Image 1 (cartoon, rainbow, N blue to C red):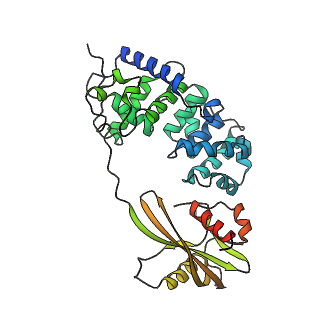
Image 2: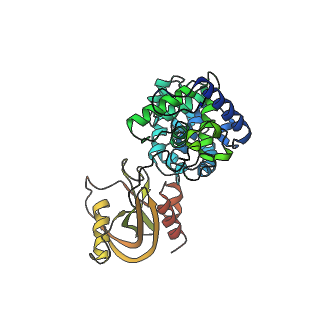
Image 3: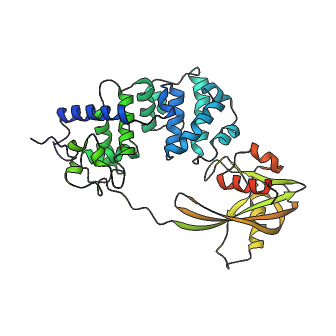
Length: 372
């Protein structure tokens, strides 16, 4: 009698299938798990930091940032007492900066409302800024061994294949099915280890393309492998084509200092400092010098004289492929302060290290610090 589960009807995972899966998964994890710094502690603060960092960020990148961040902010009290700028400076380069700002706010809430102790209850955890259902479940299960399911990109893919789910896992019906499955599979004890094992298997073996099925401890239990459906399960939505964007960043000089402005809380790089940066029309659609003057004026109220182009930086953000033209300009004057003008600062190139910048902002800062 087959014990393969399916996503339809009454053929859900049997008790025997679940027993075999748990047993094989945990045996594999105990011999194949990567030695990652955040797995060496069940301190909820450290688990929380790692889970926030790992959102939409590769493990190799987090491995570099995690120890540095903890060295700067070793506990909740230190993070709560820090300035937002210092937190963003430590986060610089990880992207999705809203994560850092929300974590900083959450540390303040924990410090003031929970006596500095990370809450144990799942409902209390989920009220903290930046913590959704997945992150709350990961923290509660790993730090406190709570019987809480998780569902993120790797486990969505793994669980979809384990039940040969042919629908769209991002839609409500798919989410409901997979969350229910994630909860059903949990053991009575050791839920943190089990959840980490699920994520590890999805990350290392049950990959989006060309999964390493013959290295998978669940191969004999997987209907997707049995039916050769690895490349079509789970259903993947096509990403929209990348949109080419032309932008300008302007280094405005004034008596040995350069102009920075703080970006608003919303949008790309919210809360960071930056050189005046704005969209440009396509080449040939207008005078670039006039566009630079108008753009800097609109953002800061500063009138400038463009001098020359410094460099061009190309990078991608979400679905945008950005060509950033970096220009040098000289300060001329400043209009009377306006409500629409951003918070600005005039800093020496040497002082740029004290300000949190975007990756391209930092590259441009190093360029002018080198005397270009």
